Picture 1 (cartoon, helix red, strand yellow):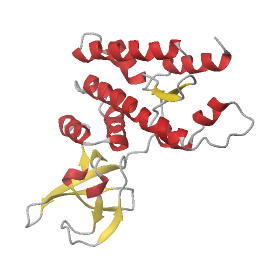
Picture 2 (picture 1 turned 135 degrees about the vertical axis):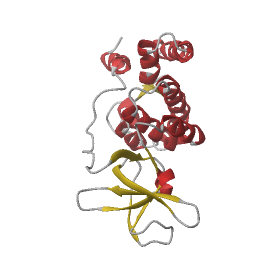
Picture 3 (picture 1 turned 180 degrees about the vertical axis):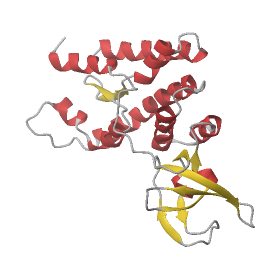
Picture 4 (picture 1 turned 90 degrees about the vertical axis):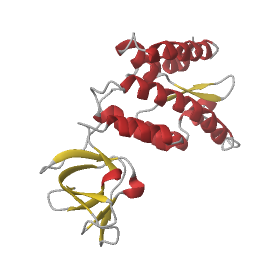
Length: 233
């Protein structure tokens, strides 16, 4: 096995729970995290016509101080974003790690593509004790492998004029991988077919940490398929 192929294989043993730099949670209330940026308008008053303070991005941590329902039936949380920034945000924009695991799983299942992976990562980072983790891990792995096909096609269209470096290095430096890397989702590259594959970290975690779960049986099947691809590399 050539050295660069060995490097691809070793990628399989990088755990999905590897540490990433985390935000410092704001003080002053119950922790929550933004999961639906479409609704994450921080407003000066608890109403949809309230003055916009700022937009919050997906994954942003906030501290919930109080709750109020507007006359049109929309519930808002008063939240601290920093020590100097606070405001009202629609309840459905955030989840609480202490109580909202099922609601977030529902949102993940209704999401597609990168949005699904991003929300699954939020779940795995903030719900470490949820019994739904095997389900989310399997979903993340399956979604990443589905997206690998789209990434492969996109990368191939941009490889018309290569330089002096080995071809596989252009693929593994493809800019389309960057946002997945920031989610700690890694892909390996099969030189014979010029296709990306998900590296299988989520599936391995299911098998290792939840061996008796129904998801573990499915994860083993995914890993067998992945290893068959690696043997041809």
